[in-house]
Length: 297
Image 1 (cartoon, rainbow, N blue to C red):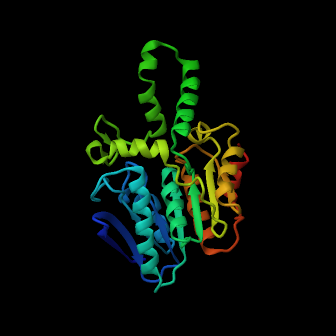
Image 2 (cartoon, rainbow, N blue to C red):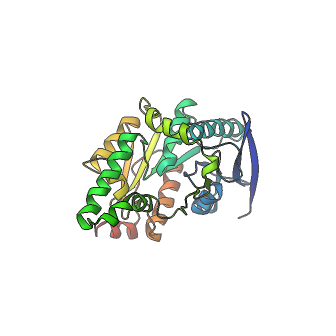
Image 3 (spheres, helix red, strand yellow):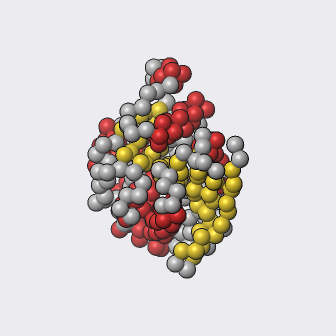
């Protein structure tokens, strides 16, 4: 199946975003995926390339300060980047009339939901994969101290405690290369540090958002220790948070943790994205091989 990969620097209000669109001749729909902090467009292309083989166009990008994008990163900048690019994608798609499905993984769910709300919901369907909804100090502190208490029960030495924060970052972001100056594809000098700290203290972009007209499919790991650290009563409390934003959301627990690295689980995620994007219904049948995996947990 031939496709064209378009790389460009999209101009946005004095900055330029590294943007990638994989375009097919006759696609069945369009997938819009924001990146992760420390990631870039190439990372999302690698993860979701199989959706292109399922005949979907794919659009992703790099936040300000990441990859070839200009500017400097902050939480607020990521929100603006996503909303601005989504506006462009929606405008360019009006001639084609393709149904657009948004995919928000982990942190990427926050700017995706925010951008969709700012633009009067051009995305009628959203897939949330182990989505995080809050980066506030309270949420971060709750996560850190829950991790600290759990690890402290196992190891209580002073030398261990001195390195607990570094271990916490490794626990939260095990697949991200981290040094004193770099976090994945993000260099410290390309971060607006004080602006980012202010955003964490005072910015809660999803606090008042409710999207009744948007269908949402929420996929999350049953053993997701990262989401579990954000609050008590997981997964019931997590589903309640999703329902506040998307009252009609459908849920599918998946075997595995936050990164859902099992090939069986990843195949099922892609299959469900395809079925969800193509059909009106929210409750999707589970494939037989995946159903066998579910019965074991």
